[in-house]
Length: 302
Image 1 (cartoon, rainbow, N blue to C red):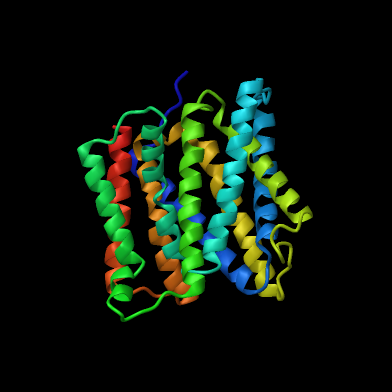
Image 2: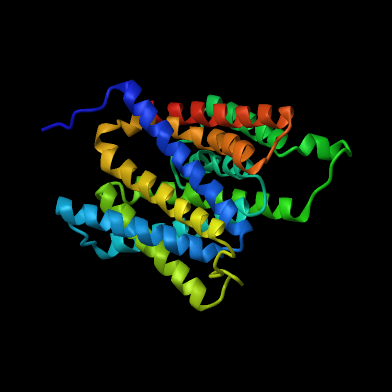
């Protein structure tokens, strides 16, 4: 029996709400980090709770978690990439405005298109190349590069680190998307996501044991920091789990570009909650990035 889809307007509202929840998770992360919380602690809490929720869902659905040796290898790669992406995006969020970090990470579809071509897939169309060029120009504006080149600003050390981590996070997530679409597409989405979260949790544990990130397990200094850490886990876990519970009814192939609301929500929440403000020109650049990525995503799924 075919699963009945939600009406289009309900689906759009749900996906936009989930995108806002993901953005809120990063706002909460910034508050927790500013209060002394360690990056690895945040990842362990987030991935651990989400893994448990998805594990319960897998059991209730009676889905099998048995993997062949080949699939297991790709799943291991997938989990490792998502773990690295999690470290990169939280490292970026801790250094630069949340909305700006999410804008750069939002480039993952561009990296996916380029990686697909490099690995033998179809070459990007002329339209896609134009869109990618527009996205890149918008990103330069959003990062305030024209102002800096004009001598009216300067590169800050933490700013450069934050942008670097954002770019790496986008590239790594593009790679994870390629693995998911081309090597793990036959797996049940809930099982794939549960195993991915489990691997993220394990990688974070290993990094903690090896003290790969100094202060990675530091706890917040105040009740406010603990509250932010709790909201981080709640927002991410609820959004991630809800997405996979409702996915059969969301027509993701058609509506996934709605999730690109996340960086916009990050900009708005960053302004309202963290007083992180961008110039009007940077906001125009951010709009160019979001519009370009949405158009590129719709083209890929057409």
